[in-house]
Image (cartoon, rainbow, N blue to C red; front, side, top):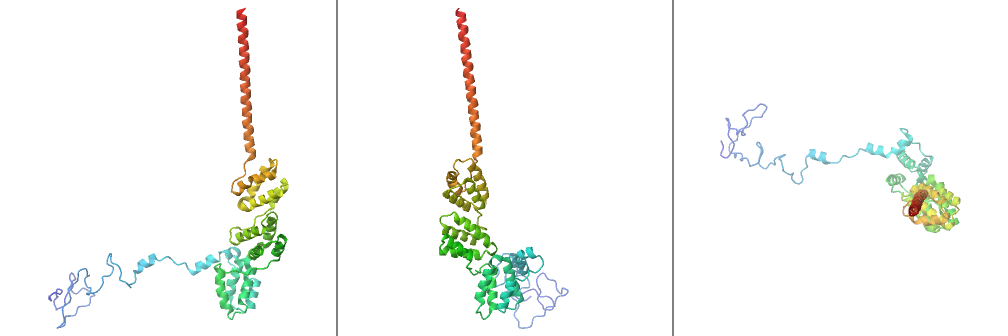
Length: 362
């Protein structure tokens, strides 16, 4: 045994503690050459067969050295799964799948004409733009006109279109505000402010398939409101922000106005109620109609109910209240009859007792 070294096997080669000599498949250890220093003794905590200065691998409770890669197994389990590109595309095209199934959506002629005008010969880009236009039919005209303006003098229209397509897909692209003749006519008829006119044009530019309905409903609303410009701006803003899906229909409200011959003030208040309670206006108007049938002055009744309905309250069940009052009145009359009969019985009994007492005296 070398001083301070490992036990030596026959032949001069140092052996590892606990290991038999000449295990099958092991390389024989070379004998120590003269003049070489013996092996260093094992440091505490070292595994057998480790050279001094080596870090033990996989020791419990030990942390990795700075700059070292973490354990591959831990990283794989802790990293959130990344959705595949195919899955993202599948989710993106859900709308088109519902409409066209497995068939490829037809190319819109206006989209094709736009690509031809700017000499962009890229089938993949054509399909991407066509898909976005298919999903947003209401803004088709507005989007294509804005893109046409942007690409007019562009040196690389294809590259610029790719960039703008990403904005369209992410919902960040704003189309061109159109000058709609119907809005112009409405603005002149009701003397709307420039702000109201611009906001209505912006709304209609993003409502291609509902433009006609919006104009008709807005005209009915403005007919019965005092602050026409403020009302127009407020409604257009709610549509653009997605707070309203459609402008309220005044058809039912007008039926109530005509049926009960409401005065101008009551009509304005009824329209305000419908605008405030757009989600359940049909139910409110139905109950209000029943309530007004028993009112002596319907216009006054609307004014009385205005604050309650604007605050989200409900129309009282007038008929039920009357029935309960009538029932209570009947009970009072029954009790009155019972008291009257009781008094009659008492009078008769007193009269009989007087007659008996007189007969006894005689």
